[in-house]
Length: 344
Ligand SMILES: [Zn+2]
Image (cartoon, rainbow, N blue to C red; front, side):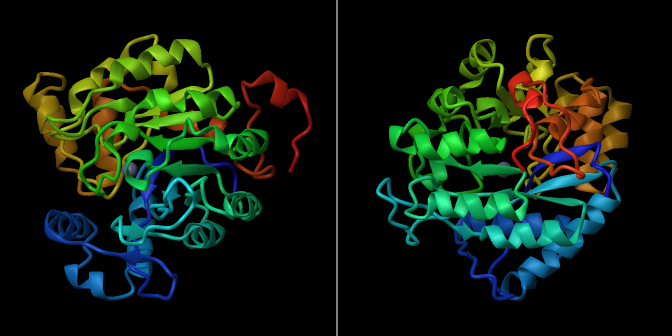
């Protein structure tokens, strides 16, 4: 298909391995309750948690994309927790969605773009990266604080340099997190992303370093300061239309910040616009109109538009993601890359 124009670049693939993917989902307590809540937004019964969740979820999600303003979404795999020496820690973490799940879905449906997930300490990290590049990955996603990844670890230089050479952006979770268990809270700090940035990787800080709960550290100002230093640094406003994470949403409209903002919903994380209205950021009519939209992808988009975000937050991802030629990857603003013939 033609290159997608409007892209939601932060949507989670969810699965339990029920269809034989090799993935798994382990939920207890609050996380189990939250998963049930998230599935209900998809009109998926909670019993799907015991069935072939991948297939049910992907089918429902496809309908949501087709019923929204978006041309495509980046569908994110979810890596396992590893020790810094590369040992997988399946005793930690709540979910594993292997990369082939999102790569296969992206091959089948033009509405899906593959966001792969690789712990750079893995013994086979570089081989997996090559497999994912060959398979059409558009970005690499990780959650440093949940997957135990210190992006500043100097041993990861070859991994970051290969990503930079391939034009594969890094989407890294920053700030607190409440939907996936935390392994090392200190790794939520966007300042740890200096190293991949210095290696030449285009880095997108998911959630712009904002806090998820009252006890989390708020890294928003650190993130914003780094934008001045690194032209290859961005932030996504995924999960910011919410009750807990919306504090800095309007700051992202500031003229020095807005050109670095990308649209993501963080689906299936719930979209709740109540605080935008209660704080007087949008009027009651806009709130009621948006909150009545049943499709959560579209509700998130329309609430952001009502707040004053331009359409560019959803057209900008197409310039940054590794979209295949012909296909054709858009001319990058990175002159050095645009001047040389594409390596693919
Ligand atoms: Zn997310």
